[in-house]
Image 1 (cartoon, one colour):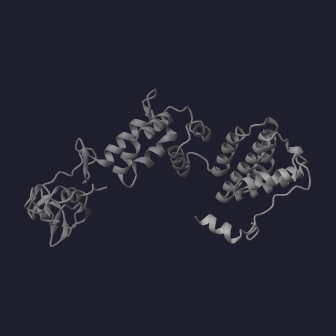
Image 2: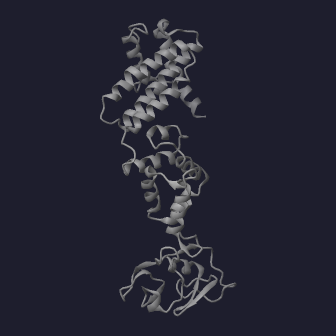
Image 3: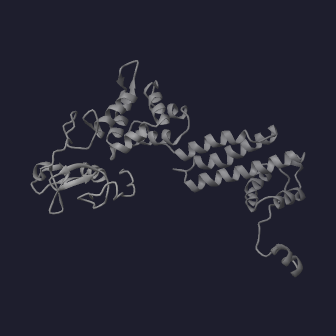
Amino acid sequence: MSRPRKPEDPIRWPVPCNRCGQHHQTVARWPDGGVCGYCYQQAKRTRGVCACGHEGVLPGLIDAQPACRRCSGIRLNVDCRSCGAEDELHSGGRCWTCVLGHAVDNLLTDPATGSVSNDLIPLAAALKSMKRANSGLTWIRQKHVTAFLRSLATAPAITHETFDGLPESRTREYVRGLLIEHGVLPRRDELRMRYDSWAAQALERVSDLQNREVIRRYIRWHHQRRMNHMDEVSRGTFLRAKQEVTVAIDLLNWLTGQGIKLPELQQSHLDVWQAEGPTTRRIAERFLKWAIKIKAAPAGLAILPHRRGTSPKLDKTRQDRTKR
């Protein structure tokens, strides 16, 4: 990505750039005139096919069209000493792609064996072939990405279980996706796995042990059982299942705070709980029907859906008071 341009300074740099016409420091003088640092960088990154048929970096301009070094007479080092290709160089006379490749190999090499495991070779190839090598290099040099790839390099086996044991992060799922795409890992229903992981943590939020067992059964026999019969869990199903369990936990924790057991639940309790909270509490209706069905809650209870126009109307005096 090109760095943003600073405001031009005609006083400090009175001679404008021959290409962009703005007043910035001249860093090179080419046959077509002096060029500023911004145009110099852009020229090194201009690729295509010259009128002479040469394909590669086209830093020159002839009749406003990009041209190769030979045709334009520009002297510019864009020859990678590692691969020999014409490209913008990063360091040590090597292009961004070669530097990226070296960094990938270094991170994915197991120090114990001195080589990249066979399972990680497709991942290495995928990372090296990133469309924008400079962006790829910036990405893998982030501390958390570097740490993740190093830990993967020393993993005894590359399996979904290996990934599940690593810290949860976007990097983990991105790399997992690359390995699935290249056939190293088998495809699996990620949303179903994510729900199982989320549900295990959600159980810890239930304050009463008896209620925790109820929620565990609700998760297992209502949501997970339904997901197991799906070819693939949709995002909508995933989000609804999380929301239904979250609201159910909220209800049970409220009951615990009031000293009320689920088998002792009365309609008046439900009405108070629903009135005290947001309208999303009506989602507990699905849990309540399930709890009644398995005889964990008394029959005849109901969550009343919110209907427009059912709120009590204020007289004019009270309406005016609320506007102040």
